[in-house]
Image (tube, rainbow, N blue to C red; front, side):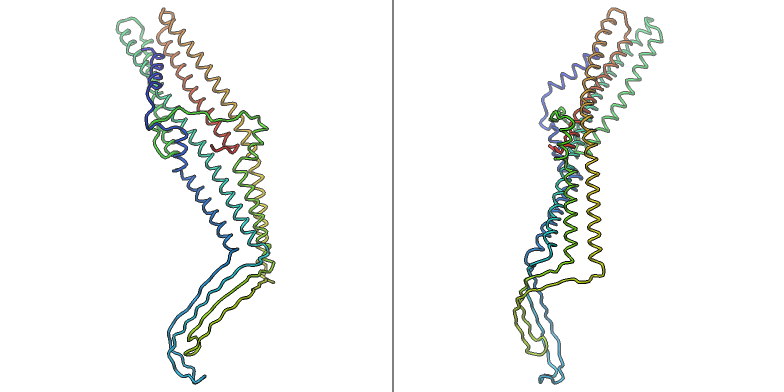
Length: 421
């Protein structure tokens, strides 16, 4: 059977086969990865911890209620004071206190603001992890489809070379062709077998990569869809990334959090005031029968006048952290600019490569049809036809790789622009 007919038949069967109930789309694969991939689990945990720190910081500004108490039993010897000698006592004491901060020099608000900025940074980094994972899933998904398609084409090519080799051996035994032509046919057969081994290895590697990213075997995959990447020029893409890239937004939030950290450290030089109210009760505390109940409402103040340089050290550390965050922001801005240029050019280069591969396949198919006619009238040998079939096979495989590269480039550009959908 002719190779082109085999390939066409295989493609027709694949298209005619009903989609299985368990066929996986790219969106479903992305959803699976988002639920099971450890990178997303880590990012989600970071967001939860940052949210908890916000609640912790906000709680510090609310009234604090503490309850303390003691109870015991023993024997006291007052030596005759107050008319008491040796006596058994059961001392008990309890106190409840309510404390409401009134003034902290801005430390509490700075702490809340810092925690909120940290939460925002964690959310942005989670978005970045999602976008990166989406790109990796698309790459793994397309890699499986490309490897499977190439494997099927190589298998078809090998079937054709096996038939040609068998016919060549029969013709050689009948004296119709020289040994050199038989050896060439056998060489093509060996080449087809070697290609099949490589195709199987590539498919196994692609399936393993998919399982590593998505968390399940790629048993049935729907065709790879193309991402909706708007036709932006480079300047528009750069502007979109500056406003939407999550890594840059996270770096900016980290700078704001570091500024709040400086405010919090500087507030330690200022006094603090708090409203307090307490109620207490004591029994048998000093001598048998002793009792005392009381309530106190007042204001407590505290001002650290000298801390041995500890406060200045914390301020210096916070300011150094701010400089580091600003440096990280500058680094992120440079990385984003470079990433946009790279991704934008990659999309266009991949598109041009896909068009070129389509032209290459068209030319290879035309050459194969022409050679088939020449073989039919005896102008070319069957081995020449096999060479043309191999060229068409390579062109088809190149087109599959170009399609995957174009799709993945689109998802990578979306990730840089901050579109994780």
